[in-house]
Length: 190
Image (cartoon, rainbow, N blue to C red; front, side, top):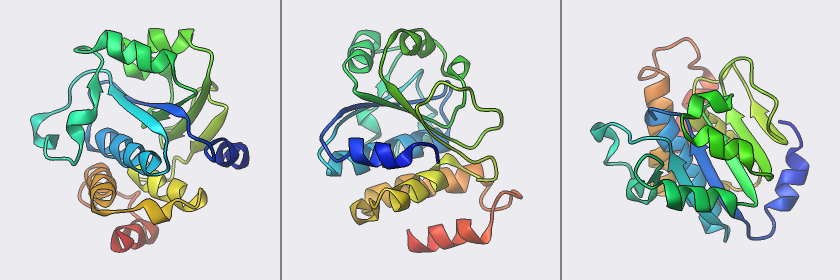
């Protein structure tokens, strides 16, 4: 984790926050975005989650998924949220090139970025970075982020469901090699 002590200080006061994930969002992208959004909202932040395009219908059960803006459908509202953000979290991708048309808007804004991602070779755009290629999912990283930021008290059933979704899908139902004893410990705590 890079610069997370100063991020923790920044999050002590209410912020306008945007959360962006990659194009063609999967369970890990949707789950991590919503878990982080719901957690930050409980701390008093104004949070907008944006996906570059819609996600598959089998993810429409996820708690609060209707709150997510689809950039392809709501470009004006999305751009406004990005432009007004004090802080932008980018989840489950390591380069603006992975977030489709949203990339152009992200390159224009002058605000601090937070990257939370488990893919190799992250780009160097984020002031705050949590990059771990050994992790099986960004959702597991969100749990560890909450832990590091002393935010575990915000966990509720909706947040736990969102985190579980991403862990379960990105680990292939706990079959992929990146599934560790820590993964199972996190799931047991959820």
